[in-house]
Each structure stands twice: as structure tokens, then as C-alpha cells.
Picture (cartoon, rainbow, N blue to C red):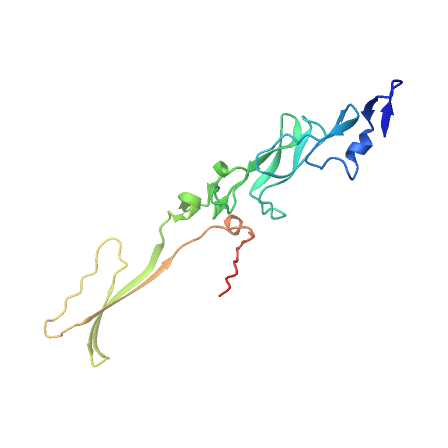
Length: 207
């Protein structure tokens, strides 16, 4: 609805017309003008997918880029300067420009990533802890026509001193078999990845 002055010229426009179905989009804000209105774009927020505002200074991000729902997101809305949802802050994620930090924990930005005990390196993929050899047994065998004829055994897991086995030259031993049993303690369940979404782009090729 226009308000008309005594000279017949229009002065301003009803704000409801500006915000109506034929008015500004949610990523624009309404500005009253002489004989009408205009819809300037909201002030941009980096990495924001859905931007909303009511004025040039009252803008916020309603949804950041790469938001897959729940906790599966590459960016998180955070407050800034006393305004809510003013910044899309990067999180640890599957994105190549981020860090998925698994197994580990990442409470905020990728720089806050702490790898689980025994892991390190880029994205916590390097195993830095050694396994424990629980048992090691070496067998020196003489095999004839796929049949084992003679066998000598030695414990190869000794730490303080090696095991020495003496053999006679009359036995032509021709096979060495070594068996290791090791133990390795992995990260706790809390350090393993949360559910993530895998996005695959499929292109159709007509032949």
C-alpha cells in the first residue's frame, strides 16, 4: 500500500508489500524507497548455503555448506560479535580441505584434532604404537616329496638372548617356517569414526 502526500506524489511503501510473496527473497532485505521498494542482497557469509537477513547488518546463516544433517557437517554456525549464526566455522570432516581425525577426537576446528593413543600423522592414520610379540616359533624342516621328514624347533621370541640350534650336515634341511603371535591394543570405541555420508557422483554414458 502506497502512502500519497498532498501533492499527489508517493512517499513510501508499506513494508508488508516488500515482504510479501512478490517481494524480497529470504537472502535479501527490504528497503523502502520513494514510490516503491528495493531488495538489496544480504551481506555475504563465507561457506553459507542458506543466508537470511532483515537489514544490511542483521544477517545470519541458516545452513552452512556441506550440511548433511545431524552431526554430519563440514561447517558449523557460530556466533560472532554478539550476533548468532554469523560465521560458518570449519569442522573436522570428510572434505579434502579438512581433517577427518580418525581415530581421534576433534571438538571444534581441524586444528583441535587429537589423535587416539598410539596414532598420529596426517588424519591420525599412522600407527605409532608397536605390537607385542606374544609367541614366536621357528621350525627348520627337511621335506621330501612334500612330506616332512625331520624338524627342529627354536623359540625366536626370546628378548634377552637368541636361541641357538645346532644341526648336523647330514640332514639337508630345505624349509624354514616361522610363526608369530602378536597382540595390539587399538583405540577405544569413542575414538572411532561417527557415521558419515558417502556421496558418489554417477554419470550416465550412452553408447
